Length: 297
Image (cartoon, rainbow, N blue to C red; front, side, top):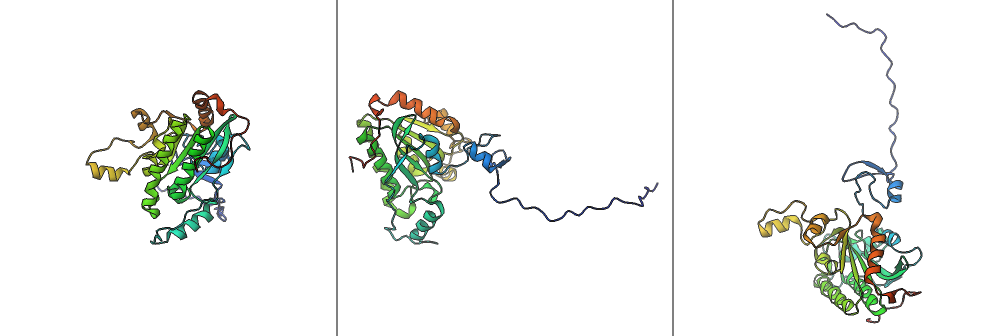
């Protein structure tokens, strides 16, 4: 039996021009794949409201979330990396430095200084992955070392927030030396009996993990942060072993005892403040934290 034919089909409505969504207005969560309104994401400290995925933060955004408003005083901002080895590749190291300074608005991959957290003075260093993958070269190592020495000399707890791919290959051995330098400075901080809180974010890898980031009196990490030394493929090919699932996540390392606590970004400031109450001597509660140069310089 033939189907009846409609002699008066419904007219087709023209679709019209396709509307473009302005770039940067929405972002897709890499974990749950939900579309997130950028303004709401920023208001939620760049944490997905659906699955609590922690998006990256810049160093200045991180500082603003941690310290009391108006209390942060940056130090050593004038230190600049130089191309001591005259490194050449697809682009020279000097060209890369100029590019990332312009793109990020930073002088290098860390911002350091002093501030207050819930009224308690601290010496703070916060890494920024946007600048050459947060890699640790001579200036990054020097600024972190000075932040540690400032804490030892001025009797302030030290907090370092790590976000790094590791040592900066463009500086060769000069970069690797920063691992020993920052670790030695932490030895002086320990002798001064001042606490060091290490905060690991996604990612914290290679020479940074193998030096100061793993030497905290308290080691905190954000949920699902990638933390390790070498990449999974390199480890697999070197050891010829099948690797445990998720072995480079904060959760795995917490189970194995490397990390003391995994802390949601919304609670990080309060948790750090509580640890400072337990660990820092009463003498750190002064009216004004020292803002000069380190006594150890």
